[in-house]
Image (cartoon, rainbow, N blue to C red; front, side):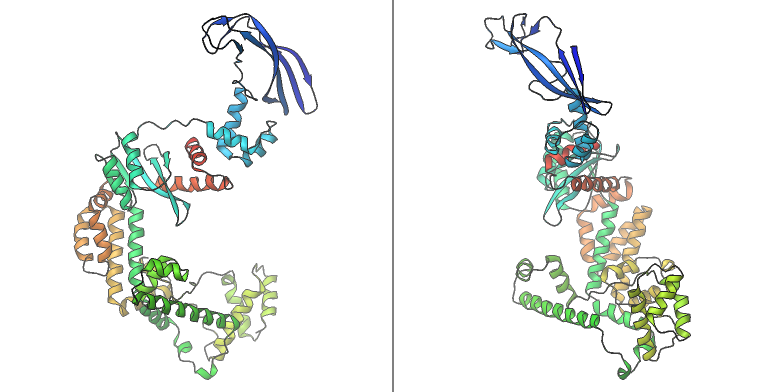
Length: 519
């Protein structure tokens, strides 16, 4: 190429150029020709210079093909810097393609415009789709897990190389047939596959890579164990409420009804919602007794299937209570208790004094604390004693308390655990089995696993133990193999970020190209 003229402008530079080659090869037959037919101009966008857009105006020649057998009589010369019919040079296309792979359409378009390489978001997505993704070398150790296109409705599969800690491929669904087909093509050298407890993946691995050792992911095993303990607690919701009542201070429990304060508006709303849940539960129970399947009950009442299953398992309406948590007022409780004891019962005054001391919370937090404090004073409780904050825990929180070492629990939590296990021996046995299972997984104590299976079969966890027995080889491999799905979960988090960056344009081909490019 020869540059004939350079025409600068405030925002761009125009380069007028032409080709110097005397002869050109025909793109169809390969024969060379020197017979020029005509000329035309091609305008090509190029990489910027000093923050200004660069445009090439190339004087391009058309030639006559000299071969009598060639079907193409006239052809245009091919430029090394651009593809046929392209509007940008190859090097600009590659840079814009990399921007699209890294940032997506709209975000990439904004960055490219700032870098003096203006391009639309749609064009960037076309460049991403045209990029060729080369798969990694054949892996030996795989990690397989699912990810959600739309939670609860549509899922895909992510496959990672655990040795290199990188994504190998994405599959559009999570069926065993799709995974088996992929393994038949790419999994000839696979020796180990780490997976979750999904039966479809187990069948797909057996069909596509029968030589591979399947390893059940230890984190998923503990999740399954926790869910099994939650199902046991759902069946003993009465024991949870009784244990929570026994953990409250006796002064509050024994206060006479005449001294109880009137219900606040929030409490009346809670009571109303509780009655609505009770009515819905009664309707669920009635339809279930009539023989209606859970799927139809959920569709008829507009409730999730898992919720219907949980209600029927518990045998009563659900109790939704938010677990007590920390508050910005906790650091100042000593001061407000002292001021309350001195006779300052005005919540606005307390809030102003706290604000002067650096309190960042709002007035409503102090007002709610004053309402609770005043009600306990009316009930005859010692005003110097701390406020009771225990509430009936959910099954999820109760399961966490039962599986937390006693030394890490607060005094109230430890008292609740001791009370609950004393009231329900079945819960105590199930919690002990789950804690032992957790120890076996953490310490890889394969020698104690068989004894645990026998002992846990006699507890309320027999359904969980039956599932473990059906996947026994993979669970045993989890105790001896060092591999797990931890790197796969990290890649799923990155995949979700890329998916959300696409602003609704994350179709499978685009998402797959971006994920594999970043890997």
